[in-house]
Image (cartoon, rainbow, N blue to C red):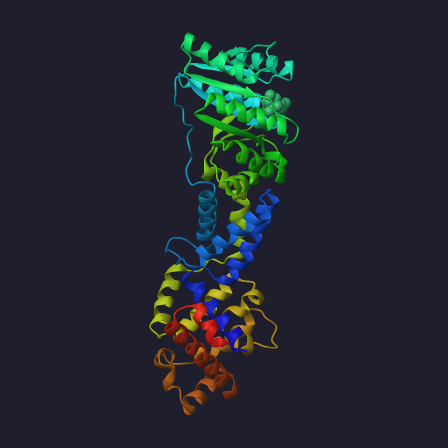
Amino acid sequence: NLSGKLDKAFKTLKGQGSITEINVATTVKEIRRALIDADVNYKVAKEVTDKIKEEALGRDVLISVSPGQLLVKIVNEELTQMMGGKKVDMTLQGDPAVVLISGLQGSGKTTFSGKLARMLKSQGRQVLLTACDIYRPAAIDQLKVLGEQIGVEVYAEPENKNAVEIANNAIKHAKSTGKKIVIVDTAGRLAVDEQMMQEIEGLKKALNPSETLFVVDSMTGQDAVNTAKTFNERLDFDGVVLTKLDGDTRGGAALSIRTVVDKPIKFISTGEKMEAIDVFHPDRMANRILGMGDVVSLVEKAQQTFDEEEAKKLNKKIRQNKFDFDDFLSQLEQIKKMGNLKDLMGMIPGMGKALKGLDIDDDSFKPIEAIIRSMTKDERANPEIINGSRRKRIADGSGTSIQEVNNLMKQFADMRKMMKMMNKVGGKRAMQSLAQ
Ligand code: GDP
Ligand code: MG
């Protein structure tokens, strides 16, 4: 049917100068699967891949890049963009600046508090750690051990059961001892819980921290997103800390959380040691999520590399309605180079029909190649001049029948007609509406 033919034609055209829809469709499906495997929430994965597709189809391929390379770049850029584009620093204001640490129990708050203190200390800042987990005496000891390890003072009041009071006292202590940053480690629960929420909300109100961070275990997958959402609704935090990225997880939570709560991820934690902390870089996380090596090969497999110089010339010819038999021949050459002919058959309009019933291998192109090679230079460039007697000569010269030559002429004419139409309406959507 016409619509199907036009579709194929479109693919051929697009295939030369930009990323083909057929290749994008398969590749995008693969990418979506990879994202879901990397714990990205389904909706988010779909949103990303839709954007990637849109972006990919709109771009021309540069001389120096193959469509595959370009697609990888687009995927990477899109993911990076969706995670905020650039890194976002903490805001440290006030004397002292207060950093409030929130999150569920076991997410890694206390460990992160220590890491952050160490990092800030190494930047020459005076830091005070504050133990506000009033429910577990062991939590105070845990922070004290870390503080000792990194050489940062830990403020604690083991007998006091009022977190706000402890934190306020810590701030006073910081002022009197010249500490410029107070990190407040708090109590979490195993699941979202009203008492915990009220307590952390109360701390935020009372302390007016310049930075409230939400710490979340990246291995908890979909739960991480829901927890982030709830904390954000109650706390309106300033940034996210993703922990336990040293495990199997590929970091899909970063993309989901960023997309769902629209707050920057500021740090990642990659181990139990105090050194295992990094500032969050969206581009690096994009690489990680995609497992760059995997995606490159995946995209390379799905996409075929075209000869870009050739492609550019061809595109120009198509735009000027000058596509001729020489171009057709060089297309055949390209397709042969790319291998896997069966998959590629659909990419030249009319070719499917021309080769119907044949076993698809390199030999399948031989009659067509022979016919074109039997044409004179003039005939290849100006197919209009190929009249009846020329057809007979060409058939004889190529060892084919006039019928075969006629078939090819007809396919070629159809192909040109399509190209011309496409040039006129300029775009696939317009073509599709024409076809319906
Ligand atoms: P809290 O309850 O939120 O304070 O969590 P903790 O800081 O006590 O951490 C809970 C557990 O996770 C501890 O055993 C930590 O050593 C461990 N942990 C914290 N961060 C990381 C990390 O980035 N990677 C790994 N592998 N373990 C971590
Ligand atoms: Mg803790």
